[in-house]
Length: 169
Length: 251
View 1 (cartoon, chains in turn cyan, orange):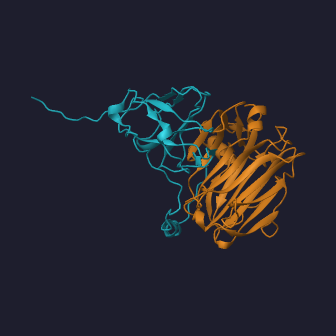
View 2: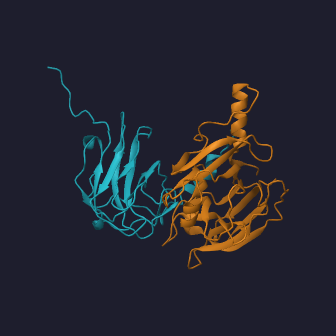
View 3: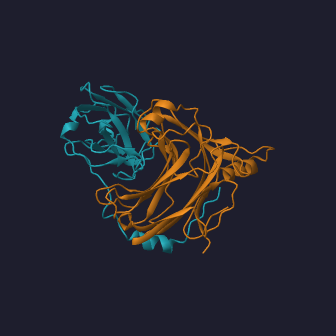
């Protein structure tokens, strides 16, 4: 394997250009931050019809989701051991869920280390496992290649719970 | 300046395995990342296989599951680029294992992402699609240009070698209205020279994308008819990915 990088001077000079027009996104209003305390729980159903269309493509710009509504949760994984998968389900029998976990920021260009789109209308999706993912901040997007929306329940995998307090009497 | 940004030849990967093992046969790596930043896989297969092109030992084998998701993909991601103002890249593609003539069968095989998105658009700065043109397999280059209502200039090139591997190279610059993308599409065995590209897409205004920041090689974004008709044994092969800032890669 050869992997040669040009000097830092070149790259650094270009980085100042910034990303003023980046197709970036933010967690959808009303979605909770998913982290350790949510481990192995089902979050209250979130109605993705209340979300907005933030991204036209997702996952390295490869998935053309167009004008679909994009419900986005911010997810903290680690530090510590984590395992299992997100389980996503909807009560809308005509809603065909697609889910992806974006890494490196919330953007249509962000790569997705895990994605799920195995079932059709009304079907649930299993997104994972998260076992091999690096600790850090991710963004869970639930959208569709169609035009639907509806209540979505997020089942959270095992994420480490931070030690809140410790004492020895 | 003769500087390589990245070389990810399947052959080099194979030779690394051969050298390390000291065995009589080259070994293709079980994992593609590293050297690639990430393997992108959903309802598809992507792996390194023996039997590369143009004297290489290994190649990238990709396919998508039949009747899979519009999100199905089988490829590899390179995040080495950093806001590049000039980006040269080369790869080999072999679509001879699939019958690709129908114009409604298409899939992206190479995606160049900018550091930012064009207003009203996406980060996709250059996308290369493998598709039928009605009678043969061809490549469609969608090249970012904010002067176009669609945000892209488009050019189609029939693969010169329908029965085997083809070498594809691009040379993309970034500027406001004066940028260009030269492209070379040749039989893998054909010698190429910098002064004789297959064609040039000129007068590009692509500063809205800022610069090249990522690249994806492999199958993604397949059309409905591709996903309905091709299976996970209808392989498309890739090899010898190389990207640089300045120097012609060639053959």
